[in-house]
Length: 191
Image (tube, rainbow, N blue to C red; front, side):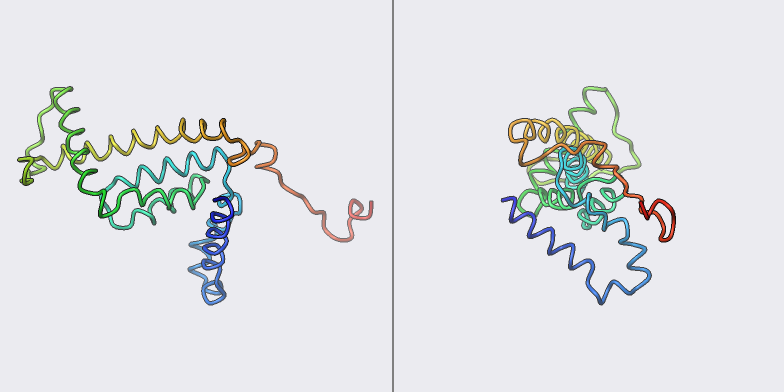
């Protein structure tokens, strides 16, 4: 499985750095943060944050979920392949049960807190379920995204504790190591 992951990541990395795209200025500005190698290597902390981001965006009913997850993962220095791959948890087969559960969650929280549904949000009819409010659905979407994102951390850390060789912990010293190369002709380069 690890070999398949590495093969897939190398292939995606090379496709993004294709010579036809590499010379374009707008593409370089857009993808420069994407090419940090540590964002593509799996380690415990970056995978946990990447899964959290991917699960959050995966349950939001938008079309470009993977794009939003990749951009967010770039910004917070999380594992990009895991963030993009986990957004596919919501697909045409799982969307309807996911939406129904999000509507149920929104209704439960709204009833628990004794909140009234706002009038401006509008209502819509769902066959077999009844009438639903858009604000209640949005509340369920955000809460389910936050719950799944928070569950990603203990799951990844438990997996890392059980199988540490598959998902190693990268120490801060190794992660932030910077190699300083002295300029040519200086005294330090001769020694």
